[in-house]
Length: 157
Image 1 (cartoon, rainbow, N blue to C red):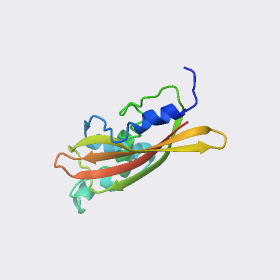
Image 2 (tube, one colour):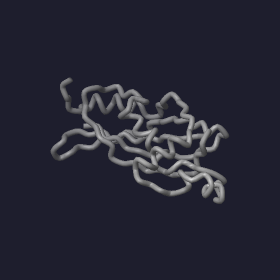
Image 3 (cartoon, rainbow, N blue to C red):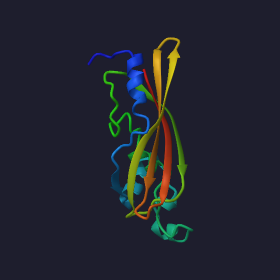
């Protein structure tokens, strides 16, 4: 596929996406996921690995490590959860800001939903026209509690 430069028409198409939401999808959290992720990154915190120790904490059991929130719900624009009306363009993740509100426990069913909240046009010195697409992703558990919110920016070139 030929890589195309971003045009003013592309920016206009992207701006029509502001307010567009992805279809929600669900992920059931499993403690083996927590353990495998912690092992993979070398995180030995007993909150995600040791049930006996974790039961003695305010959480009353094992909880997901912070990396778990991020590992399953990366950029919805780059991974196709929100389909953009342009193809053949380059892009990259520019920013991710997470707010963690509540722990995820084994057995929790997390609903993930993303929404494009802004598209900003900028002119790069060497790259040409760029679009900064800001999106918000919310993770809500089966009790209706927003466990985390991500604010991210994908730059399209």
